[in-house]
Amino acid sequence: MKLDFSAARSGLAGCPSDRALDALHVGALPPEEQAEVQAHLATCAACAARLSEIQQGFQAFAGLDDRVVLGRIQAAHGERRARRPWWRWLWLGLPVGVAAAVAFVALRPGDAPGDGPGLTEPGVRAKGTAVLRVMRQRGDAPAAEILSGAPCRPGDRLRFVVDLSAPGQVQIVSRGADGALAAVWPAAGAQAMPAGRDQLVPGAVALDDAPGEERLYLVHCTDAAPACTASGEGFTCPAGCTTSLFVVGREPAP
Amino acid sequence: MVGVCVDTGCMGAFAAEEVARLFRLHGPQVYRRALRLLGNATDAEEALQDVFLKILDRVDDFDDQDKTLNWLYRITTNHCLNVIRGRKRRLAATEAFRVAPQRADHTVAVDATLLRELLSRADPREAEAAVYVHLDGMSYSEAAPLLGVSKRTVGNLIARFDAWAATALGGTS
Image (cartoon, rainbow over all chains, first blue to last red; front, side, top):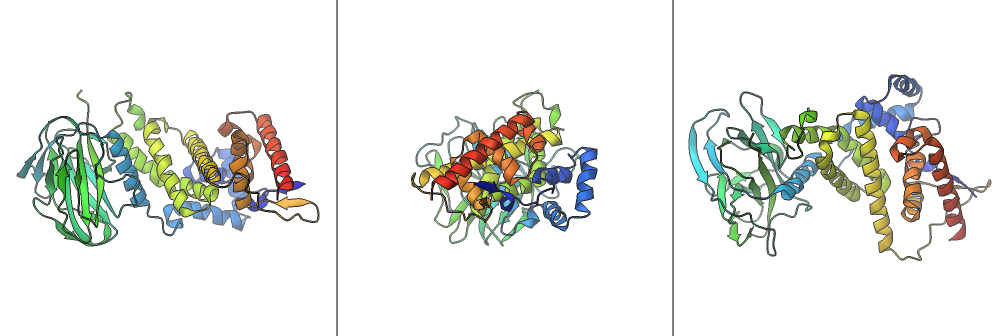
């Protein structure tokens, strides 16, 4: 018996491999191979279509929300890195870069909580309906998005961006080393927000020189007010609420 | 540049920004590859997430596009093969291969679904080679650096896989 694997391939016999097209797309193909592949593409409509799909990036996949996946990656990475959180935050008024503090939240130092039984923090593999993203501005440099766990230094200014798959009540809280929750935004209560991506939260926070990492949670509730309470090492939120974790790391002292 | 990171503890903003950039650049490739290997969007999305979490541990190695591409191919392939093998363990051990009709010239057409079934039971090393050559359409020269072997060894791995697969498809029903 002979086996014919051509039906399993995306290209025909003599067509460039998937890797060759991927390498062409990211500019990793040696010049001589690049010329060869491009000559083939000029005569093969099927391969031209394959390359076109590659060039579309995530847009080629209907139903996949790449931003949500990246958010989950950030959350999972943050969960790995979360250790000894305590920070103090200065809440700054707009615009970013203005150094006038309008509020102050102090979190108590202490031992890091473990992830013991009863903890109701977000499961990092859960299909979340809300994602917390963070933009960091350092000095006069433009603000840039950072991943969960990225170390920050005193004076860095952070802004929050929220992706929501459904409208609801939203708040951002910080969990202290003893499990106590402190409001980060809004200063009290919660804020109603519509569904949508790239929703910029008003205001910014500036970091002082307190050591340690900090866990921030976006709490998003569609059916109830986000009245989360500390409970031992974790915290609990009403049914209908989801959370998204972001860890603000701490740059090692020079 | 990530390359300025000289300390394992400095997985910092540069690295984080680099991961986001790599996600935008290579994420579609990883997802597409996982989709072809796994055959459904849910598993492919999980694979995309898992592969990029591994990247977070290795991000300072990605200063070479060619090496990056090869590494992503390898890690995605092996991750998906593990998922496929895991699925197989959940099925009855005696489950037969789907019967593939033979053509008049005694050739059996192996599509992606049947190839997936074969990969779930094949020798892991041969399965990885089969993915590169039979699914991706790589030449032995292309597959050799990904497998870390010579072109000749790739040929041997493929020959063994094909012989095993022919026996498996012909001997079960």
